Image (cartoon, rainbow, N blue to C red):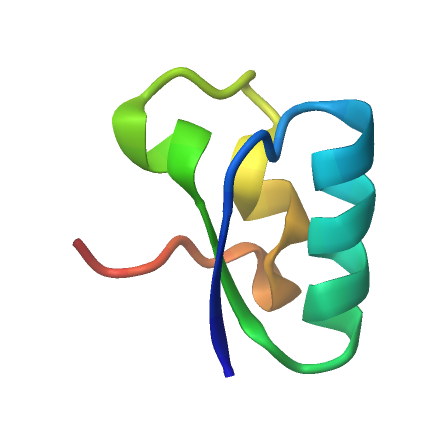
Length: 54
């Protein structure tokens, strides 16, 4: 399932995102998409470190 998470860089958002990825979901972080995420952002939490295609 594709999931859009808001607040991914925060404590709760990052924990939820990591759990969703662990369960095999394709997760996008709105903060990362908008360019406001911290440097470890979405790539750290996606399996294999790959960023989604634009």
